[in-house]
Every structure is written in C-alpha cells, then in structure tokens.
Length: 328
Image 1 (cartoon, rainbow, N blue to C red):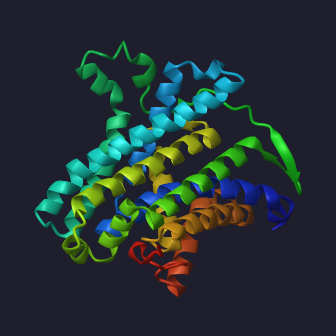
Image 2 (tube, rainbow, N blue to C red):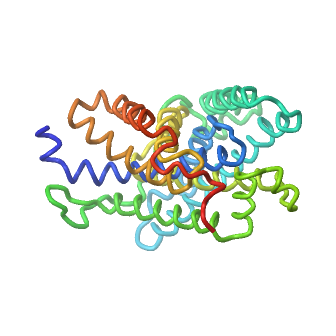
C-alpha cells in the first residue's frame, strides 16, 4: 500500500499511457466483432507487424541521427509506416483467412479457429524471417533486418525523454504526453468517422442488422474490408506509440498485449468504440495499481482478475452498447 500511495501519480500517468495503447488495439477487436461477430485473435499480430514496419523504415532512413524538425518528420514517417504495414496485413488477413469461410457460410467456430491459426502463422513467420529471406537468397542483403529474428528489434532513438512538468511526486515526461494525446486524437477521429461519415454509417448498419443493411443497398463485403482497414490503421498507430514508450519489439510482442487489448475491449463492452477507449485506460491504470499492491510479478494476473470481476457484475461490459447502436 505504501508503494501505491508514494507513487500514485507515477502509476496513474504511466498506466494511462500504456492504457491508451491498449485502447487503440482494442478498437480493432471491437470493430471486427461489431460487424462480423468474430473475435479476431490475429489482430495482435497486425499490431506486431506495424511495430516492425516502423522499426525497419526508420532504421533504413537512419532516423537515430535526427535532430530539430527532422525528429518530427521521422515521427510522421514512423506512424505512416506502421499504419500502412498494419493495414496491409489486416486486409490480407481478411482476404486469406476469413473471406473464403464467409463465402462458404462456415460456422463461427471455424472462423475463430482460423483466427487463432492465423495468429500463430503470422507470429512464426516473423520469428523465422531469416529463413524466409534465405529462400529468396536475400539473407545477406537484408542481414540488418532479418538477423537474430527471435531477439528484440530496437527503434532508433527519436525523442529524448525529459520531464515537462511535475505532478505530485512524478515528473511527467514528454513521451507520456505524446503517447496519451496521440492516442486520444486517433480515438476521437475514429469515433467521429463511425458516427458521422457515410462509411461509418455503413459499418453501424451492418453491425446492427446485416440483412436489412443489404436490402438498403449497403455493400456488406465492402464494409467488412473497410472495417479491417480501419482496425489495421489503429493498430499501426498503437504500434508506433508502443515503440515510443517501450523502445523495442519482437516477433511475439503482440501476444500478451493483444490479450490485454481484448480484455480492454470486453471490459468496456465489446462492439462499443467508446467502451474500448474506457476499457483500455481503466485496464492500464488498474494493472499498475495492482502491481504496486501485490508485486509486479502479478501485474498480468491483476488485469484478468479485474475482467472477471467486471463480467460477474456486468457481463456486457461497462458501457455495453453495441457498435450498431452508436448514436449518429
């Protein structure tokens, strides 16, 4: 308890920062579930590929030597690289793993198994990328990117971490502010996209009643593709913020974070965009508080205990409103 009291502000701010990353990844789970009623377990790997996309592009450009305005430019490039890579992986995932099953009217359980299998395949492909490069004779050419594939890949140092202002006993760092504000802006943009645009209305219509939406002229397949695209872009944004906060990635970086993001989506009310935001922030702060009370080795356990408690008393999550019922 003393640790929690003496480091309350530090635990809260850092919890909000990592919780914002959970929220962005959780949006991918909640959007796909809202439209397809499918738990896309491979979404964690969509996030992981985004982290590698950013690391590789910034490494190739020599971003670690940037200063001044160059830092801002490299941040934009890093976000763009991560978002593009994650969006492409998400679209390929939908095309290869889910669309054929959808066309055959496969049972939901089959799609769920396909999602789990795709998650392992994508993760292991990244972990064996040196072997993949060797098949094409590119192992030496790409040695900086495919060498030691099971070890950490480090993001070039872009932003010097420093204290911006003091909050209680904790000096709030510029990295904390960048991560939290960037995530908040992306979530507001997505919320407005879903609430106010024609494409967003299509997503809500399919989520609420796919058959009626089809009768009204909504192209369900197009809506599903857009949903995966948007979820991938959000995962890419989360990937860049994760790198700014943590600094490294690896082939299985998406596993635990993906499970926590899924927990955040369920906590807030899966299928609810604003619920994903709320669930992620609560989860990030709660696991920090919990680790201070019972030890950091129990950090992950605390997160899942919180989920169980919430579901016992509110099975639909904290907000519980479905994507299809979101207000225009």
